[in-house]
Image 1 (cartoon, helix red, strand yellow):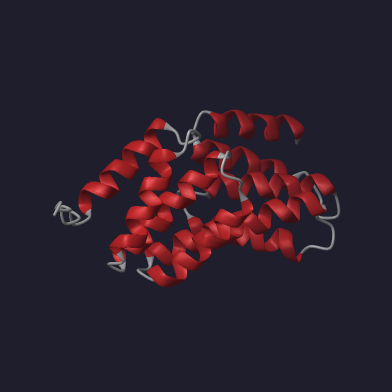
Image 2 (spheres, helix red, strand yellow):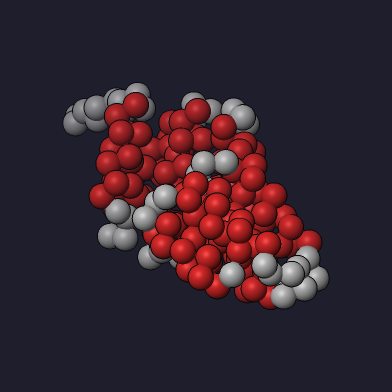
Length: 174
């Protein structure tokens, strides 16, 4: 089972999520639910689903949270990832206010120097953009651009988000 988990991790790092899910699901067959490793492996399965199938990811995280056998560290990670999954599910369903509330919670999990913080800010900006709250959307995108911890990909997304927003009126000097 441990070799399958390592293989799943290799696939995750290579962004080969379907292969990662297959390897990790097979590893779970060999790990009884009363073993701590089972829950950590299920957490990895949630990660493999995340970004492709938020509902399946959500189910993995919810099972971990409901288990009396899961370690607290796994439950903490599952709680954070469940909130991220729910936020994305709300966004995909067009429930932008609910998504914004969930992304605000996600922001509270990650300090500003963690890449997930900027990603959550981008999603929060998209939620505000979708609800036509341009001022809040602009603020989110500008925070990403100002962050020394934002990836170039996140900064490019923030610039695209700003470009979609209506232009601010030019200030005139009197």
